[in-house]
Structure formats: structure tokens, C-alpha cells
Length: 180
Image (cartoon, rainbow, N blue to C red; front, side):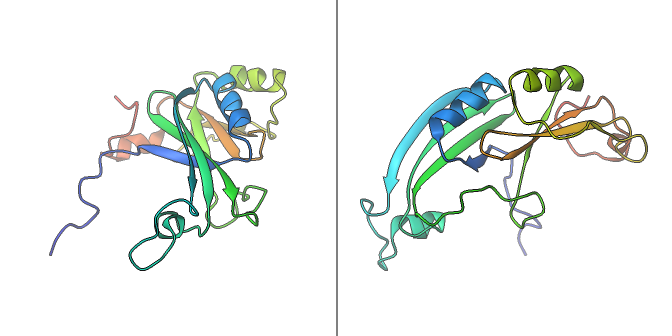
């Protein structure tokens, strides 16, 4: 019958965000979050790339975005994540605001920190938009968790989390990062 789930999955390799300005994004993620630029690629332009055998343009066939022109930067963020930042020059009718967390397809990146208050003070001192909080969970499977959301310069939602041992960890054999 085959595999019950996708065979060979090892770990999350990277997450991606689309931004309106790659250089500004690199500065923010480097200066605020300590990310390290690994490489840049592009531009990739549908008008200059070979179409598929059936005539579909390259970006439509591979990225599900017809007529695209894009560049990207890969950054290392922390010990366990690569962050891929995309900048699309085309299509011209792309949305100019990131989705809200309630929108289908929305996402956010959560970063675990040792001291949430210290991290929030750091962001605030540098003019980063920090949402109200922190949110403190004092019961249930995440008792002891403290979180606070903030925004990058383009409105992409990010989250800081602080916790030690959480109750749900006792009930799982999942190989969670950082778990003893």
C-alpha cells in the first residue's frame, strides 16, 4: 500500500516570507534578530526562462505565479531555521500588505527566547512595533508559556515565546527541538 505519510521527511529546512524590499528586510532580520545572510539569487524572470514542454511559463509551472520576476535571499535564523526572503517585481498586481493571522494561508514565525521581557525591551528601544502583551498561559497543556507578537517593517507577524518545560511535553514522544 505504501507509506502512511510522506516518506523521508527529516526536518523543516526553511520558511519563506515575501517582502517589498530585500535590502531593508535583510537589515531588519540581521540587526534585530541576528540572522546571517547565506546567499542571494536572481533575478528569475518568466520572460527569460524556458517554458515547459506544453508552453507554460517557467514561473507558472514551478511557482504557481504566471509572468513572475523575482529575487531572493537565504538567511540563517537561530540554530535551527533558514529564512528565505522573496522580492517579486512582477506580477504588478500582487497584494502589497501581508495577510492577517486570520486570513487563509497566513503564517508567522515564532522565536524562542530566554528572557521575553529583555527581548521585548530590545525591540521597543529600536522602534519595532510590538503588539500588546505578553500573553501569559497559566493552565492547561502550555502552562508556563509567555508570548508576545511583533511586526517586521512590512507588517509580517512574528512571535516571541518564552518557556521552560511545558505540561504537554510529558505526554508526547515527538522529538521536539530542545527537549531533553
